[in-house]
Image (tube, rainbow over all chains, first blue to last red; front, side, top):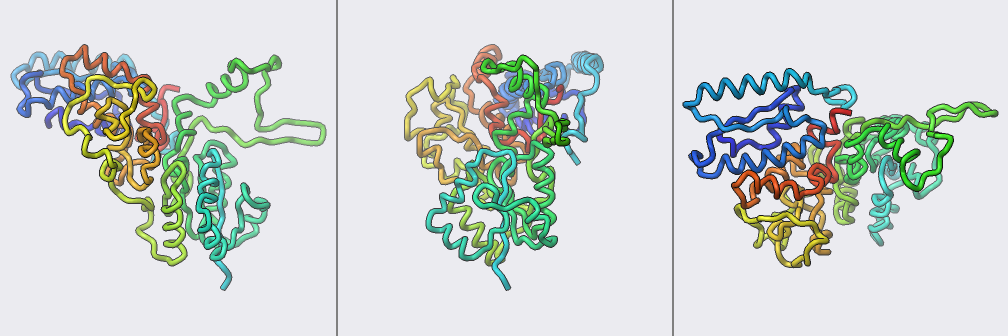
Length: 102
Length: 321
């Protein structure tokens, strides 16, 4: 889906469901089919990253990058880098019992 | 048959919800006429044993305000649940955690360190902090457990209805009481308020930005607020887009932006994230460094986006402590 459609609730849902990292990959700025979708995503990303820090979620767990459909090599590079970062950080501690979640 | 029995209890709250009942003014006489209060610690002299001596489900309705922060509050909520036909979460703190819920950005240890040791006005050379059990000459004294995390009422007991607001406005309280007395109730789990966004009925709606239009975010004390224009259009954070309507716009009418005490509409799961989304989309800037600068000018994003709703949010609390 277009990065401009990514509701911050989706990101929180992923963390809430046990994801240790969330990676959003979108079309390069200027390449948006809807003109502004990725810029909107960029603004939401920076605000959400800042807010997640206040929730104790390390910056490395949440990343936005631009990878077009023809950039196979970059795609691999970004994924590898993200995986390495998250592995280094280890699991995100969400104590389900303490939080009384389902 | 006697009058329906009613209980009114407070947990982690300020007492404003009790004030809201008094704010019913003459209408309170109608309520008193129609029901029998069996428990209301703030206003009348009842003891816990008076509740314990009632049969299960004997109380027609318990209105419980306040979030759950201590073991005693959880115990009382559970006791009232057992004794009541209906439980109504009364006010923002019971509904979505309220401002006491902001404590979920820290934990019990940090709170105790500040309150008993580090606050500048403290004089506690013996480093004394409250204990759950203390032996004294005449026996053992106990205090309730202070939890690490603040909970909403429905994270602790089953809740039938929610009356939102800090505090709930008198017209919604009266409507709820009338609905309960007449048995004309909506589906279980409903919030007893309109299910649309505050912006929908806001009189400043015509000046609400439709697209990216703000270049700076400001705080209320930094500008002369235009009493007619949409707060967001003035670069002031107002939670209206992510907040439920029905409050009577008391803050907006006093030229203060919305802080979200009614919680979100039923279509939103996380009020803070939804507001974040709305705010980011109206920032008129596509250059990354400038975006960061504007965003960094928001002093405490999580604290303001979840002013009332942190315990009810998806993440519920700070995760690394």
